[in-house]
Amino acid sequence: MIRVVFMGTPDFSVPVLKGIIDSSDYEVVGVVSQPDKKVGRHQILTPSPISQVAIDNNIKLLRIEKIRTNFQEVLDLNPDIIITCAYGQIIPKEILDYPKYGCINVHASLLPKYRGGAPIHKAIIDGEKETGITIMYMDEGMDTGDIISQQSINILDEDTVESLHDKLSILGKKLLLKTLPNIITGNINRIKQDPSKVTFAYNIKREDEHVDFNNTSRNIFNLIRGLNSFPGAFAILDNKIIKLYAGRIGEKSKGRPGEIVNICQDGIVVSTNDNDYIITELKEEGKKKVKAKDYLNGKKEKDLIGKVFE
Image (cartoon, rainbow, N blue to C red):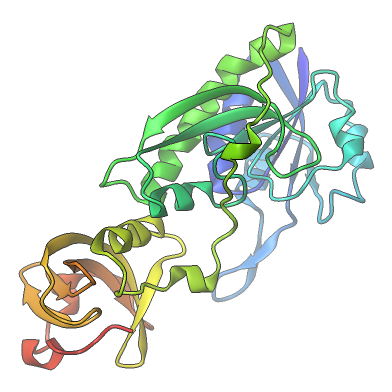
């Protein structure tokens, strides 16, 4: 039986790890994840989603803060293959060179596009029509290794980062399990990444979350759904942070960008530099996420129209 060490951290990795555990062809001899973090209002020390899977399945768990310098425990597990998925750290050469079948990564983009930690967000924000999963050999760079297999998936207008995340997570599990037997037998065609086609998807920063209504309605539409529901886009209204989660594109704008020009049955109509953007789901600072119609309860239309999102 093939001895597997799995390295991952967030929810995205969970179906991938469970797929390997459920297969009779592989023995997961160890799981490596980030150290437990304090979560929530009461700052309770909580295992990562991948750590919890290891705990639930009685698999040896290594919570390693800095894998570059603290890797011997991984080698001591004597893996035949190491599989990573959204682990969050660069793997050192000592680990990369150890397993006889190599170190394999499951990445949520069609490499060489969108190397980095936020490929799902960026694909939606950039208005891509498709994305996918890449199974690749790892090297010392960030998502720079040879491609083993890929599978694409369409990005629909109704997709958010949350829905696409879930679709790609399942696709990653299926493609990995389909690809692994060929990796073991050597029946693969390694494909070098074309450096002329490389793009990056660095982790989302606070400034990336701000909605600028001077932009086009389509770009605003893509940004808001590309950040829904994590971490959430935002704009400022009446000196309050308003998180924006959903909406749709309306008619040609007649107001200045960011101005609330109308209230409709299910939303707040805001001007952009071309067409209106109708906010249908939002969250006021210090309150819960609600539909726009619920947010508008108790508010007078005349008090809102003419105000400007900044």
